[in-house]
Length: 125
Image (tube, rainbow, N blue to C red):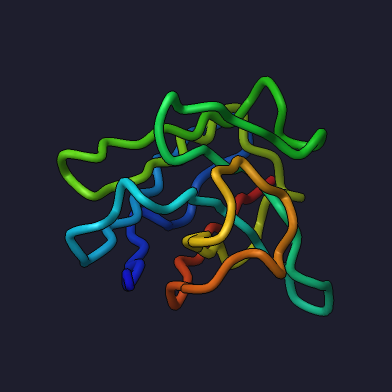
């Protein structure tokens, strides 16, 4: 199994950029599809982006398409989320998750087995 740990969140002005990282312990990292989700106060957790185990197929929520980029480095057991042109509505707690059951990329929250604790992203207007 893997244990994701997120980092890189913070406070940024609208239009700015942040890069989130997710380091996943475990020697079988390449065997997991990875995803990013987010949850704003009072709202349900929602899909942001996902990347497959290998080949690196990607999928994005419509709300972030063209602004966010997911990538992974299997040699470093790390997945990244580059966030550009940030908007106040991107403010949320961002979670990294690992999917052991599908090749990916999946937007289905129920397919993800292992979750990090989250990193806060706040975008001011």
